[in-house]
Image 1 (cartoon, rainbow, N blue to C red):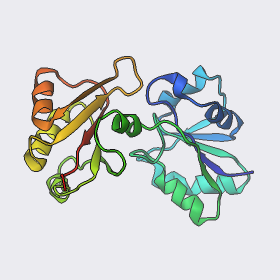
Image 2 (image 1 turned 90 degrees about the vertical axis):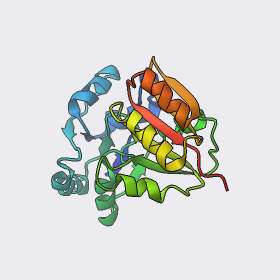
Image 3 (image 1 turned 30 degrees about the horizontal axis):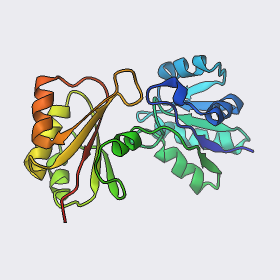
Length: 224
C-alpha cells in the first residue's frame, strides 16, 4: 500500500536502530534523506539498497509536491533525517502535512529522539514538560526567553556546541542562576555525558570545559 512512513534513525549508537525500521527502509520504493551522504553510512551498515533522494530544509518546499505525486502513483516512500525522528527540529513537517491534506496515509515508527533520554536522566520533573527545540539565534531570542520566564514545566532546548555557554548564561540571567538544569551531550555515543547542577554551576563548568558534541539542555520550570 502506497504511503509515507516516518522512520527514526539512531542519534548515536547504530544498535539503536529497530528491526522494523530496517525492514521499512528495505521495502520502500524511495527514501527521502536529509543528507544522502550521511544516510549512506546508515544504509550501507544495514545493507539497505533502496534509492535515496535529498529532502532537506533548503529544498523541501520545492520537492514536497513531487513526493506527493510519487506516493499517489503507488510508491512506498520513507522519510529519514540525519539522526533521530524526522520533523522534531528536522525537516518533515511540510511533507507530512501535504500528504495528510491529500488523503495519503502517514505512518510514524516509534524510535530514537535525543530529548527523551536527556529528559529522563536529568533528575528534573518529567511528568509535564515543554519542548522548545532550537531557540532563535538572534531576532526573537530574548523575547522567547522572557516568555518562558514563568513557565512551570520542565523546558527542553537543543543547542550547538558553539552556543551552549552563551545559552546557559542567558538562561541564568532570565531564569535565575539558582534554577536547576541538566546538560547532556553525545546521547547514545561513546562520549555520552550528563552534567547536572544550577545554571550558575553549569556556566562555570562549561567555561572551564569547552563544549564538544551535540547538546540537549534541560531547565527546571519555575516553582509554583
